[in-house]
Amino acid sequence: MVSARRRADRAPHLAANGRQTASILRQFPFPLPFGQNLGTSRTEAFHLSHLLLLNGPNLNLLGTREPEVYGATTLAEIEADMAQRAQALGHRLSSFQSNHEGALVDRVQEARGDVDFILLNPGAFTHTSVALRDALLGVAIPFIEVHLSNVYSRESFRHHSYFTDIAVGAIVGLGPIGYGLALHAADQQLTKKGK
Ligand SMILES: O=C1C[C@@](O)(C(=O)O)C[C@@H](O)[C@@H]1O
Image (cartoon, rainbow, N blue to C red; front, side, top):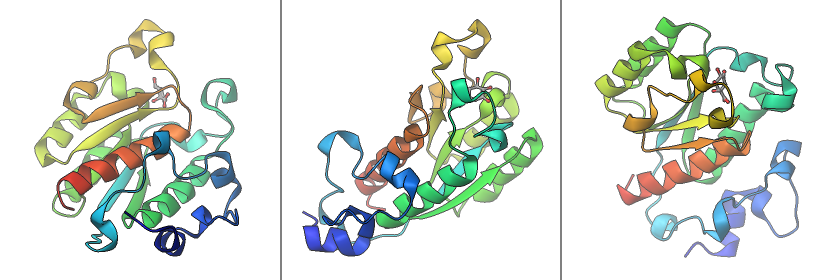
């Protein structure tokens, strides 16, 4: 078990005094999923994994883009929040966003041998990109697919993903908290593998 004291050292925003480091953390405070704790033996065997948060086209517009669909949180806020959450779990997080399919393919290829887990919102490439799918298959890095909106309640062309069948899992329709949930799930996967 992670003691309350150790948890507070590792993740000051978890401390009982309620000091929060950023407003976004106030919106979705730790620990997230369903009363689970942060893992078992990791205070003794504390490994640093490298996670990559990868966002596709138009997600740079978050905050102003169709806020009724995607909410008011900006990508910069999501990336900062995710970096803090990753750090609190003892991991390192890199973030990359591009509007260009080739740039995303290049970033996935670069991740080989360096990144342990990818958190991916492919944006509209979800529904079109065999190239990005092949890149993920090529590097064989496990990933979780995230969508802010519930793609299944939207236009039918959004119902098909080139990624879900090769992903560890997918989180849709929960807004920015979906990224945090994906991070916790990735952490569990890495812990299972002893990373
Ligand atoms: O750009 C996006 C964002 C999205 O991936 C989401 O996060 O809900 C859903 C996609 O259909 C859309 O093209």
